[in-house]
Length: 97
Image (cartoon, rainbow, N blue to C red):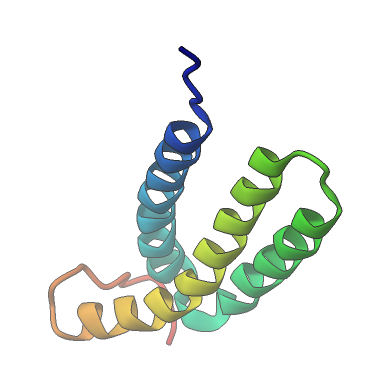
C-alpha cells in the first residue's frame, strides 16, 4: 500500500501561509497603512509567474498559494483599515494618515 502525502503537505502549507499572512497584514496596516498594497501585488505577481516555470508540482502549487494569498492580502489590508476605524484594532498614533 502506497501513501501519498502531497495533498497533506500542500494543505498544511496553505494553512500556514494563510496563518502567517494574517498578522503580516495587521502589522503592515498598523505601521504603513494601506499604501503598502503594491508590495503584496508585486509579491503575488512574482510568485504567480514563478509558479509557471517550476517543474515540481508541489512547489508550483505552493507558489500559487503564496501568490493568491498575497492578492487576497490586498483586500484584507483595506478591510483591516475599516476594522481599525471601528475600533476593533488599535490605531498607530505615530503614523500620519
